[in-house]
Picture 1 (tube, rainbow, N blue to C red):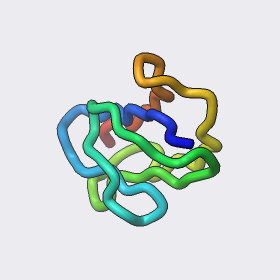
Picture 2 (cartoon, rainbow, N blue to C red):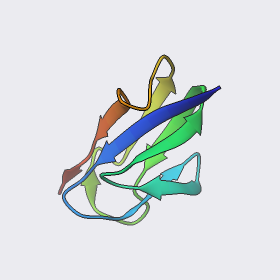
Picture 3 (spheres, rainbow, N blue to C red):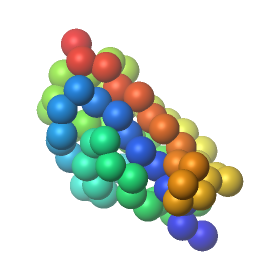
Length: 70
């Protein structure tokens, strides 16, 4: 089942999910249900990645994952 996430960061950049580009920051995109590792590649951010079990989301209620500028 598809789930919905929104990764926030101070600028637009690619979001890697399990090492593969899956979307862009500050936009809602879909991932499969389950545990995933989210990171922003070479962009300096804190934390460097999030490992999250994604479930029970809706298009209008995505899981919000926050990265902060270092």
